[in-house]
Image 1 (tube, rainbow, N blue to C red):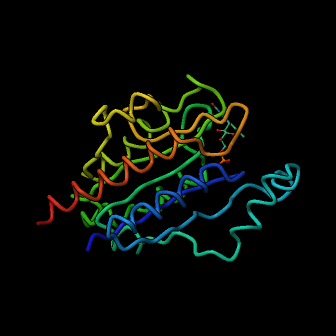
Image 2: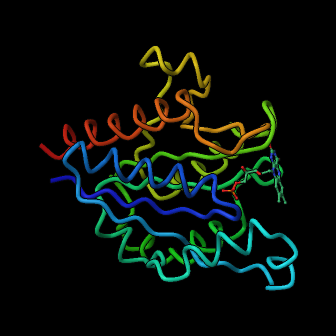
Length: 197
Ligand SMILES: Cc1cc2nc3c(=O)[nH]c(=O)nc-3n(C[C@H](O)[C@H](O)[C@H](O)COP(=O)(O)O)c2cc1C
């Protein structure tokens, strides 16, 4: 069985919805799944200024937070983050910045990784967010399994670097978003299975 860790940060719930879909799809693909959000680090004054932000943080407050053990346990790690000025959110970056001892042991190498993100606008930096995330994974010796255009669904979401949602008018996941997540997850599970067989 493939172990899939889905490690993500979400302020207002969009990336959270993507992470939950990814978890469902990975389970359907026969994987063991850990769905883990990373700690909120923004000051409570900032969170409480935004109703959607505070409501979402409350929603996940009882759910398990990501730990380093989730990375060592996993065969596949999917990272999710909102796009923040074309990069990942500082909350996810802070989690990545706690991995030095695992990196030193080589414990993060040879696993399959991919990412997903959401941003408000098309061309608003979703691709650079994923590419910047992957820079860390290259340092680990991880195997980035990007979706490319390996399925027709990729011509709908148009992001060969991972799965991404343009929120625009609605943060609800649309069919193209669901298809892109499903394709990414099924692909990483399949490729990981080939690597470990
Ligand atoms: C500080 C900040 C920076 C952002 N930068 C971008 C950006 O560069 N491009 C973009 O399209 N959206 C940007 N956004 C919008 C978020 O990426 C978008 O609302 C995302 O869907 C939020 O995901 P969440 O609901 O999971 O928190 C930014 C939002 C914030 C608060």
